[in-house]
Length: 208
Image (cartoon, rainbow, N blue to C red):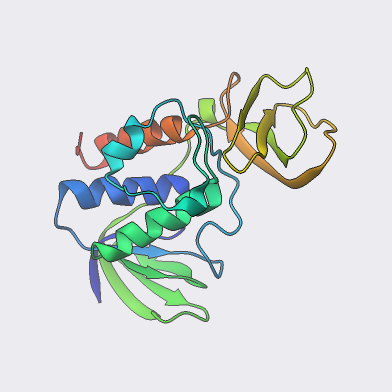
């Protein structure tokens, strides 16, 4: 099997990058993921500043499962939706897959996955997050309003809150916690991840 682009780990940056490649080329894309489901779980941020990002990725209509508001959505379902859009437009996806590179343009897929064995590729996308976007952040999904020390948060249409802090804090009625990354001022929002993906593709493929 030969692919133009292989992504060994279908995290948020890989999914966005793959979608931008798909929109700009007719290249073949293979997305691999070690877990059973893409987006479950995820450490990415569900906040965004403009719905324009969804226009750029051409992923509408957005499903109700995203619980989208004017500034946030459920990031795990956003990643899953991106994977569905990619697959519907020709990308191959294989979960429970471990990728081992055997040469500059070949590798082997192992695991309990539908696609396994030797593959060849033109581009292998092991995307590194810039150091400036790699500071640790703590996320809390909760039902009560955020405490005063939280300044970065959003209320979603399902009435839950997504709050982010650079230090661990205690918030009542938390039903999900995760640890993500970002700058010294903000977690990596969907907007910021889109810009990271664009910069990566510009430097590696000259797409932008």
